[in-house]
Image (cartoon, rainbow, N blue to C red; front, side, top):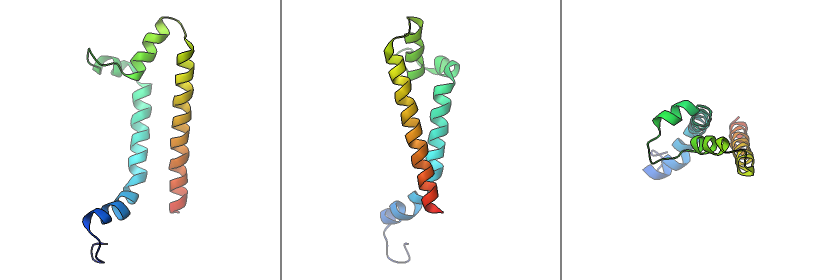
Length: 95
């Protein structure tokens, strides 16, 4: 692209980033899945002033099952499904 007169930013946005996008999305999905799934590591790694989503959900469950947990779980499920579907659609367009 630079041989044909494109600048560095244009080359990055139109050539490099689309080629890296599937790997970046897959890595993000894996990191998101592992961070939600592994409560024990999150519980020990989180600092005293920080509250992550798994720790917040755990503290809510200890005091009963409020409807907020059900709504939050539904939202997380829908967001994850939308990201997976978008990723699959991007992969289908490339082939």
